[in-house]
Image (cartoon, rainbow, N blue to C red; front, top):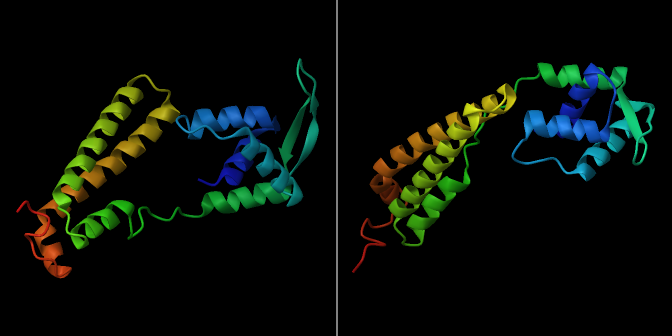
Length: 182
């Protein structure tokens, strides 16, 4: 995710202070991995340096004063350019799970147990997300759906790979009995 562009999008509505931006970001985009405060303020500083945001007043409070930021014309143009740009499809052709399967075969381990463990881990995560989305607000529910659909695709890949391990062993020139018990 592009944190700077998300912040520009949140500022597109109206000026906000850093604390408010962090709270909105966490609630809307990353409920299970909160954005560190330091990253919010460092991003705001870079956006200000680059002319994408500007100070828009200070809000007094019980604690330290809260500096508001507003998006500039340049920031709005950058946000709109980014928003119109298609997202590059994921995943990439190289993944960690694929790498582990190939390496397991190359070093003489059986890949089946690795795939079985990964399948169980994916199914457990899908159950967690399914339970979570039942009572989740729409933003978090849609994020959960996105994750579930990716996990479903991974499970299809795991099953397809498990069915083709012998072919993969042959392609890698590894005898099929490598990794089997003596």
